[in-house]
Image: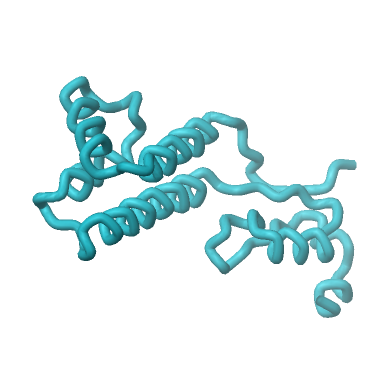
Length: 142
């Protein structure tokens, strides 16, 4: 990153490191290390949209993997977890009583290891983190 070191210090303090690898702005070790090397005083922030998008992707990948392990194929409309896939991406607290019953029945029928439930719980935690204050940009404090 010698080109970055050649730039003046003022613009560097106002920039936010952004990862293109899909790890939400420096959550992975490689990106965080690079950002810390180039911008030692910067705060690393993750925007809410990408945080939820990554959590949704994780729930979808876990659901697909469990379905393939159980049935040896992709999900179909006859699979309860596949038919309820949109419910898995919705916060449990936002579901109606009928939707919660369908959600619980789908997990009871096709989630023997509780991996899908654990991924969905993680999604709920990430969505709850949206309520935390988020800086508009990262800067060094004077």
